Length: 181
Image 1 (cartoon, rainbow, N blue to C red):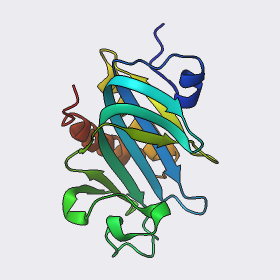
Image 2: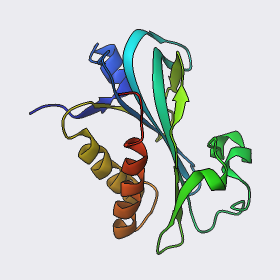
Image 3: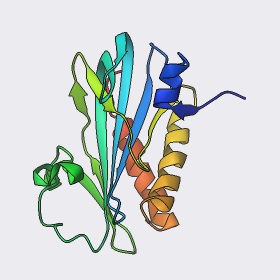
Image 4: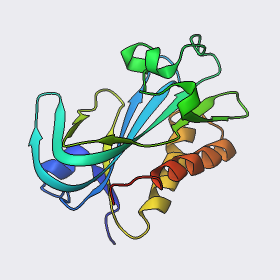
């Protein structure tokens, strides 16, 4: 059976990171609530990789997509995501996001348009319950990503199952806009 995804730093240590591209997914969970942020990066043609103190730096272009899950009891929901404190921030205004409201009033926000990262980007080392994964660019990678997001939005961010599946489709719509390939 082909491996579809691995922990990013484990894959790096085992020299299993593909230079010809893949999808990197990092999570950032709030310890006290269901507030969650995800960063998806597609990369291609890595010139070099190096492990730094704070993370793994890719010398490569990359497309980035951001996902933000805001629970119904989030007290600063009126503040644009780009202007929130750094642990709650994504680089978008409300007008730049597709926003899906779940039955439990959680909001799932997804970048409308990916951001291009030229020449290099760094994936931070995960701490606590956060994670960073590499999804290999296999034939069914988009279905794998969609399933992954429907599961993690439900289990980790508290989004009801049916809404998590719908929100995962927003994520894949954004990923389909990547221009790195």
